[in-house]
Image (cartoon, rainbow, N blue to C red; front, side):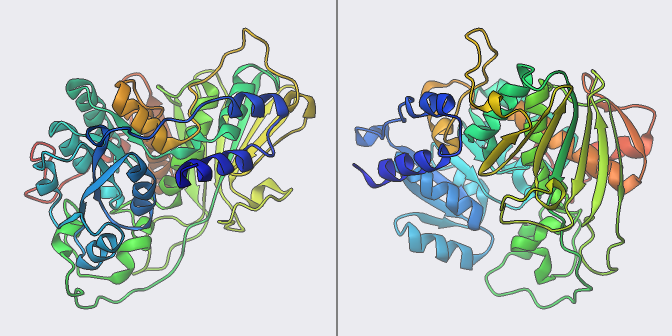
Length: 436
């Protein structure tokens, strides 16, 4: 048994250990995507953004191909990646990667504000792309990606990997099939962000192209706390934990409601604590409320415990995850755990005519299968766009501190010019959507 096959089989068995027997049997009966049998079947892979998340995805994907190039604006990151894949070419400008004929797929593991331009460039260059979440930094960016995916007929997979977690799929199938009655409320709990500062500017480290790192955003002095892990706590580059974790859990809420290619009709929110001047500016603690066209209320709150490790506790508000409340009971699901106030729905198979959802038990594998078959991935451009839109609506509601009306069909704010202005972002010259 090859190493990855063994690891996947062991991982799948472990992942299914807390699932109901009937669902586990379905899961284990599925075969895995085979490895390439011939050299010319192997994918040429390029990693753009060589941080921890991008590298993690790449480590899985090389089972199906070869790392051709590693790209980053930081020489240290390139050196680190080439330590893993010595034969890969090191590149600092992602546009050079798009010119490489031996690159078939792109892994976009950059900071959030680069996701859209890198993904657009990849599809326009005839390459398929696995892009980390959130797919975009602003709502209108998702419209560009959806249009480009259709135009180029490329495969785009958004890295919201919880859709490939059987627990989350089971929870959504149970909700859609009314196993807890009519869905009435959803509570999403996200980790609180960091509240630190003020930070001082320092000289730009040798080997880092700070101007390119900033890209389309407003030019500022280098502050190390703006980069690497910490970029997500700045509005300029991300949306705090609202986009970092909200892209996962709010995506599951959309999936369960059936509004995954639509969305809510309103969002209201507020911050719960002031940020420190000169420090991180993305709200660290917040609460908001969405309402769907059918009246279902979806609340989203930052946790007080900031439970990053996903350990199971009884008080839902001390851990991040998703709770669905119906007229007959509730379901709670998070990474590694699912439970219900109606235990029998977890042990009784769904009826033969039940609605079943797109099945993927491995997010990278699903992407590769889509690249081979040309069938859309489980988190295609529109799925990623709608999930990101949920987060952006929440960010805007929290920043403005009021209720916003939203038309999910036209994808427009209603009667609020200030909110409408946030749907797009100003880009620092020379960058714009046509240049990639």
